[in-house]
Length: 155
Length: 187
Image 1 (cartoon, rainbow over the protein chains, first blue to last red):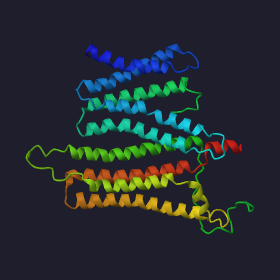
Image 2 (cartoon, helix red, strand yellow):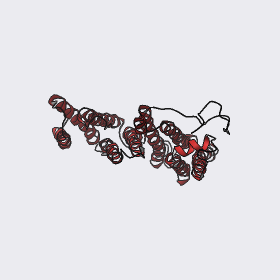
Image 3 (tube, helix red, strand yellow):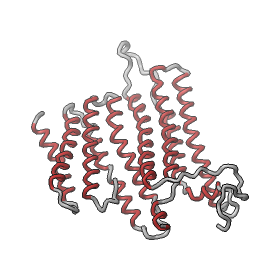
Image 4 (tube, rainbow over the protein chains, first blue to last red):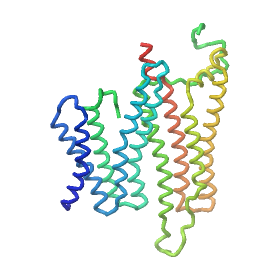
């Protein structure tokens, strides 16, 4: 593998890990954070390799989808929490956020299959981008599960 | 309510109750995620057929032929109907329906319940119309002209509309339990 690809992948991964690391941590679990950042870098490396090896940058959409997947839940959780104590507390925001999350995760899984089915990308690129996206999303899940806000902020 | 709920209630109109699924908060969240996933999956089935059709090449033994059939706007009309029906059914407030179908003459046979019933009818009719329309497209556009190599386009269309219908059912069942926070207030 050419070394500039690795540095490219790491340069994508490092700002995100530092962003995650700057969130207020509950308990300092340094080895876990380092392991998670390595897994995140590995996920981005897989996705960027699946694009760069065949000079076809369509699988990068998968990374975008998986990075955006936790966003609706956090936004809708804040929306619903505004009127938590009122008697007409409406859980529709939270349900809508969950629906959007399900849509985004399924999009990230099925978009490479679609592209590979129409022979727009290679099958190997399809599997690599799915694995990389799963690693990225799993990292975000595990991070928010361990260090996230209070445990009720599920993704 | 002055009269307690019993299995036999003399004010009931219907012989069977509207099925009431008691789901917990865990089932509720899982069902909502599942419904969103099914919705996106059924859309991607249609997108897959459309992408295949846009990149279809003539067979390699006759490279100068034209591809006989493509997906056009006609293939998208059932999807539009189904999506509209899905939105209508999902945005409906289920609590009005519970009073509308319980046969309770005092409860809520007001204008809200009446409107909820009409809106539910329209939504389900749109979804069923989408499914029927996709079957029509499959038969009239792909089976009768005998485009055997391209039958996947019509099949994906039927699968997409059926998937949207199943997604609406999953969402309905998972939303029919009470809200989690309401439960916490009563306890």
